[in-house]
Image (tube, rainbow, N blue to C red; front, side, top):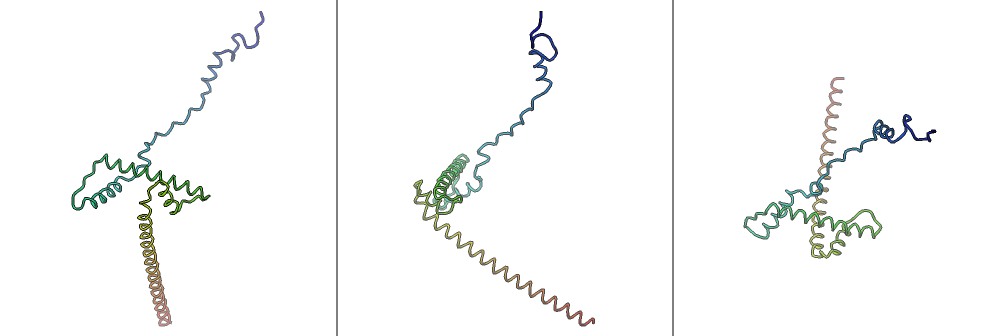
Length: 173
């Protein structure tokens, strides 16, 4: 009886041989996945800042009364602010893309506030931005004049040293 090709107990043939071959050459093990990072840890606003903002505003509204805020309420404020920021930035990004630009500017944010129907925020934001710009301009001009004054002092100080060094050379010569 003649055996057909692939039949029989020849070495390296049959299902047992293929199982042995698979065991002999291990397939590369997939790299272990990094542990998942909870979304709240990645995108959560700093609790201290949220607490300070909430307490400042509530104290302003309540007058002299001491205001306490529950931990869960602070978490809710922080999460609400985060969602609002995402929504506003996505809307501003859409406005920016419609203008065929890649950088969101102040006007995009203001238009986004109008589009999501937060018109009452636009004027307070404009005035806050103006105050911020004035404050920074004053700081910049103040620091420039201070740097200029220090540079002049350094220059006059180094000229005095050079002059006294020349006098020492003349006296020793």
